[in-house]
Every structure is written in structure tokens, then in C-alpha cells.
Image (cartoon, rainbow, N blue to C red; front, side):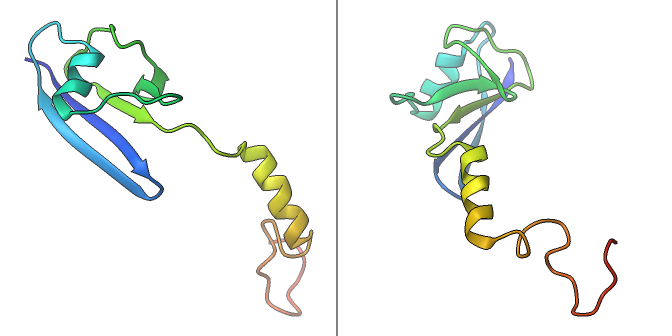
Length: 104
């Protein structure tokens, strides 16, 4: 009997995990159904971070993930955050002490 973990994040900073013991030959759809989850429009299903089909068979130790779509492209969000904060308030050395040497 394969034992799989099903992970789902219904809201930001909220992650639900459930461990299931499934019958041999179970698929991704069986694992989601065992948790009462159905992929909504735009949600992606994956195994260990790689996209998977609902008909894909599962192996022991797999981690099935139901992922919400991104609202904002991370690159765009970073550019906007940098534009708001300015070059002095963002980056690796932004929190330097006053009078500290440049660099490390």
C-alpha cells in the first residue's frame, strides 16, 4: 500500500497536509478524492513540485501538491517593491549601521 502525503494551501500562510494509505495502483485523482479536494479552475496539481496529470499513478512516499495560481508575477512584484523602496532601502546591505564600512 503506497503511503502518500497530500498538501494544499487554501489561503496565504495556511498549509494543510494529510497522509493517506492508498491501494496499489492509485492515481493522483484518488489521492485528492481521499482528502475531499477537487482542483478548481486555474489550480495546478503536482508531485514533488513537478506538474502531474490526475491519471498519473502514485508511488510510496510521493507528495501530491494542489497549488493555487500566482496572482502577481514574482519578477513584477520585485520590481515594484524596489521602485517603492528605492535603491538605498533594498538589497543585501540595506540594513547597515550608520557609519559602517561599505561591503560586508
